[in-house]
Image (cartoon, rainbow, N blue to C red; front, side):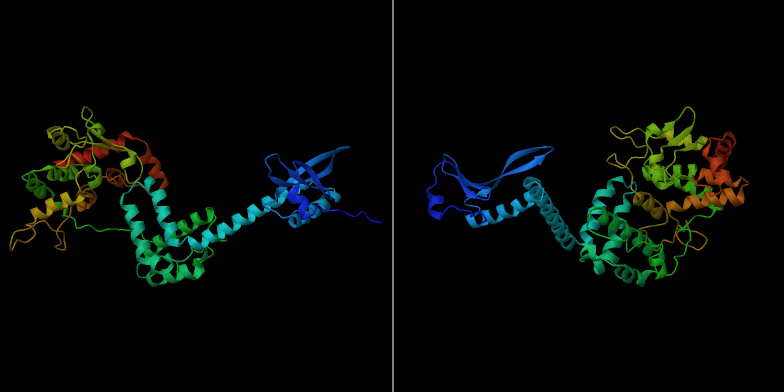
Length: 420
């Protein structure tokens, strides 16, 4: 006959004295001297060629009733009978439960985290490494204008290819450059979301073998911003008028004209960048659009201008703003606008481009390009290098990468000739 298991009665459990009290099937009620009571499972497991006795806690009497403890003890006894280890079995169960809980939490996070949440976090995380301060504003602006109204409130894990196509379609052909940049930004945000476990599957904003099947191929045109530029034939006339204007903004514009440098490069120029003995301005790569150090030989006029600049205490800038910081782009623009009669009743602009549009500081590089390429006879590589442009041809690029004596000498002649 099978052995009849005699369980502890309710009264026996309630009145049990400190010690171990068998309940049958390897289950014991352990009573501490403090009066606390808990369930213990005793069993043997084979380790190598030996049987090892082990004890496993099944919870306190308050946590588990006798019926619950007996049911679990029975289930674990079956595991042991099958050659398993009850403790290892429970640890595996707990790990499985934890993994399931993590999956559930991940699913909840996917539902709670919107595309806008992910996009803002992406911008916050990556903007510190963006060299151009306008980049953050551009990211925020395009996403707020075109993406957020359509997918901003959607769980990031639920954004589909059709959602992306739907928000891009209205501007894909009318604002192609903006649309393509927007697509790239959405792709990056969704890519980051996948890495964070908030998405699964392919990126719905990817172009190749994805949106390229739904949208027309974007026009690959170089982005050209035509700033109103003064005709080269009037450059000396303008320079003479500019020298009659006082202030740091006027001197910065004059220096930009003499060096063919960008407005931002001139406004951000610091004394430490100048070697006045060798008459050269060395702009570090961190400040250059192309990300490469740029050396500009200074003409006599440019060198004289720099030497005449007063050094402002507690400012590293050669052309400091009134409070010692960097001049704003608007400060230079306003100087030219005032030269064109800004604020004067009935005044007509004097300094205009070939279409009669008032010129702006950014246009003087185009003026230099016109003068150097059409009026003078300097080689293309000399002109492009003077403008700090990247040369697309591999041979030209290799030529420009070196500090070629011939190229530097050519640039010096061009800038010196320009200043005359």
